[in-house]
Length: 222
Length: 273
Image 1 (cartoon, rainbow over the protein chains, first blue to last red):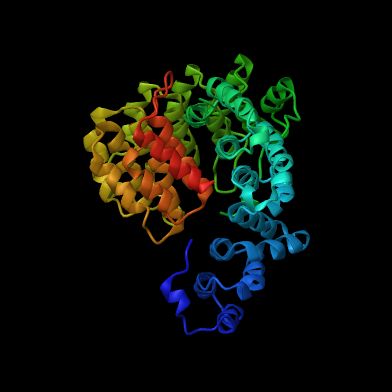
Image 2: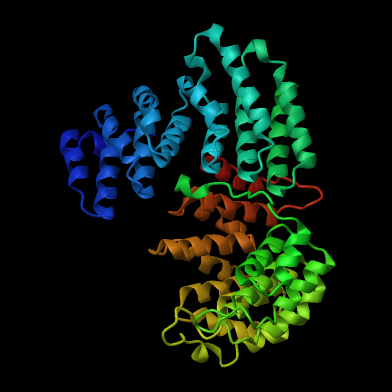
């Protein structure tokens, strides 16, 4: 995501955009207002975008997640701090945003989300856990954190829902390509996991994705 | 993309198979019968006694809805579609002439699932009169026949002899029926013009229509649609299901060969997770 030219040169200050969201009297005008605020990529918009996650309006929530992901790191602490006060839907959207921002401070939340009861939350968490920006962590903390992600993702490849298993494979593949030196031997564990999924999973799509991931990881092993 | 609507539904089987069959066979409690019929399909109970009781239920006269429908027959037809037993084909064909529209719809869908060519001719019969006859029943939310289910079934059943019966429905005023015709004609001819019609439907203003087109493209596995599917304004969960259909239809079950088009489909899927 990058800042668009129009957003940068927008004559509308963020306060005015926020006021538009509060004034919106239809789903369409709300969506338009959230999209504009999201495009501003302004950290001042964070509390309002987080508030939109709880509006029970999927279109607006998608736009707000996009805005929070675009803002990135500054949104992480506000998202984490308010997580417990969210209603169920808002929490799912917040976890989705955290998965996509990829900040390792979300590790614990994503570990928990990988066994959430809603499959879309598990799906997002599984992909997010594998693709955290590990280099944001001090070097000494990386092995423990990556191990935790690995310990969560391996059992997630046995989730009852095919799409969660598929996401766990994608997460493991990304994690495998970014393992810190201390954990380099875990790459074989990951490859073995892909091999058995390729053979045994009930769903052809999952077997195919495991096969692709196994090929990629095996190339790293050589 | 409404996370709250994607809650897992894996109810524990709280009944035994014997109980479910007994519940279906008794006649005192209609709601227990109705539930048992659903349950036997949901948990894929392929025992002879279950099949026989479900087939009996297709001619049940006791369970009637206020508008004269046959709720138990609807559920029994749905369950028989899931159980894959040939003995159900002939009774389901009889159900295609039931007075209850929803029984006919469930029977057409079940016959599609059973994949038996004996159903082709009776299904084509429901298209009689063509588009002119395919009007709404006054005061009801449905047409005189379950055209979309019938057309979809004919596509799945490789009813190439029915091409000229299906073709006119491309111009039916109801979009859902047009899509079903496109889907069937693509399956029967492999002609990309029909797949492309469904791709265009992904840009409809109505979300329900975009969702329907997504499911149709997934069902026919139209590879050229992968990118358009991934960019459709709809829930990621539905787009993932459609792309899964496309992926699987284009893979060899025994030795999945991952060519570049296949890898591309998976890349679209990866981005939607």
